[in-house]
Each structure stands twice: as C-alpha cells, then as structure tokens.
Length: 155
Ligand SMILES: [Zn+2]
Ligand SMILES: [Zn+2]
Image 1: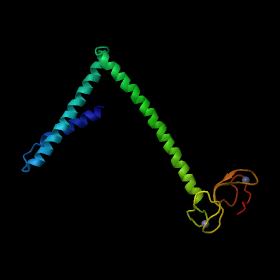
Image 2: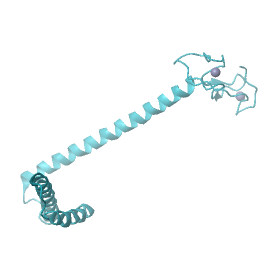
Image 3: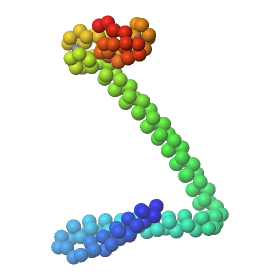
Image 4: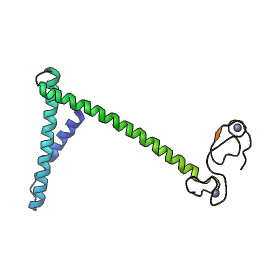
C-alpha cells in the first residue's frame, strides 16, 4: 500500500507538469480529464489510507461501515479461495493436455497422431505409455529398456 501511495505522488508531479499549454483543445481536454482522474484516484487512495489508520486507532467508531468492510473482506477471502481452486484446476487440465499430446506424438517419427490411436499412423510405432511386462513399472512411450528392472521392451 505504501508503495502505491508513493507511486501516486509520482503521478501527482507528472499530472501537474502536463498542464503545460498546448495548441489543440482536444488534446488539452483529454490531458485535463486524465489528470483529473489521476488526482481523484490519488485523493481516494489517501482517504483510504487515512481511514485505515484511524480505524486501527478508533475501532468501533463507524460500526455500519466496519461491518460492511468485514463482509467485503470475507467475500474477498472466498473469491481468493475459489480463484486458487480454479488455478489448480487449470494446472491439472494443462498437465492432462500435455500428457495427451505426449501420448499422441510418435516417439519414433514425431508424427502427431489422432487421440486414442495405439500405433503411429505414419510409421506404425507403438504409442502411449506402457508397463513393463517383467516388473509392471509404467514406462514412457518409446522405452526400449525398463528403467526399473532393465528388461528389454517389445515393439
Ligand atoms: Zn511414427
Ligand atoms: Zn521392468
């Protein structure tokens, strides 16, 4: 928050210097409007900072606002939690897609096959992860020798 505040003051200086005279009234209007927005944002930020500080000192002064604030904060927490859940879901989906991509891509010739096919449509090599017939370890496509027990793989 402190950083935002300092950023705001930097914006204040920039805002004042942009009141330099310019010929085009349209450009002047746009500048003035953006300066106005800037300063209003800074004012809001400062009010928020003052409000936070005074609330820390005199809690209970604005019971209605404080209960609204609590509600907003609890909603915020819920939304953050659901956002995290969605992000986890997305990561899982991305991983599943990568896995499918890997299983469809031929380890021998690199051909991207249709989903669900067991052998490369280009060269006939076996696709998808398989398990070692000797030790049952799961092996990535194209494995020639089992990484667990060293048994030679067929296909
Ligand atoms: Zn192939
Ligand atoms: Zn094995």
